[in-house]
Image 1 (tube, helix red, strand yellow):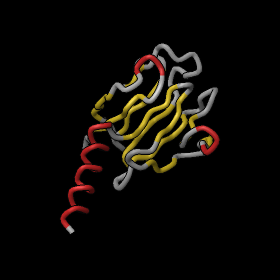
Image 2 (cartoon, one colour):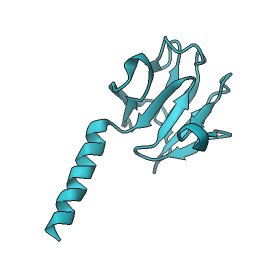
Image 3 (cartoon, rainbow, N blue to C red):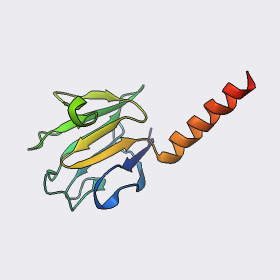
Image 4 (cartoon, rainbow, N blue to C red):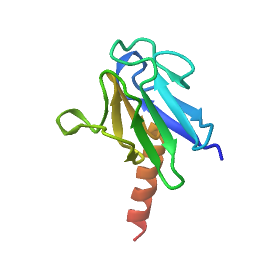
Length: 125
């Protein structure tokens, strides 16, 4: 079953841009890289491999996997970032890096809506 994957660019020339990608295949997935056939093509990142990483749905969560890229795929930010050694679960709102490009799973609108709903529920109690 296809799922929609939402990613927000957190750096680079596309900083702040939100993209929604339809997953395909079994398991449903999208790939990130410098060239097609990747579903998310980022041409202006010199540290990105042609086919760098893959995000796939394992039936219960999104998984992030490095595709033997030259510069690795990292989950987390800056000093706390860890290089992926295999497929790794990624939660909504988490930031990851492929090449020099930082991306966040889920959109800014999703984050604002969740924060607003939590604030509204807190004031009702």
